[in-house]
Image 1: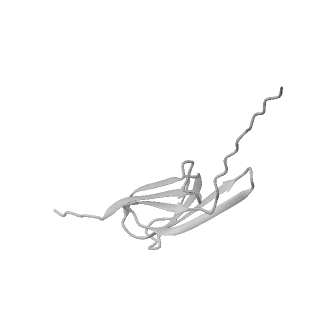
Image 2: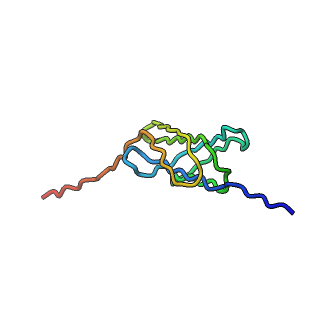
Length: 104
């Protein structure tokens, strides 16, 4: 009888704009050791959660595009499972306000 213990944890990465607000993103995850195939995932919340990965370095790239402004932003980094990491993309949050005027 054998007991096998593996050091695994969850890879958690949040894509945010330059102000720290979560943004939708397309993620690409690459395992430099080549054990896992390249993963391409979309998250409307900008939160990437890959469970039960062997602890080690993973290259993560996030890309977010705005069809309204026809612009894309991309960021990347090397992350390890076991903690929530933030991946900041060079985008600014834009808030539109509609001002109402009363006419007499």
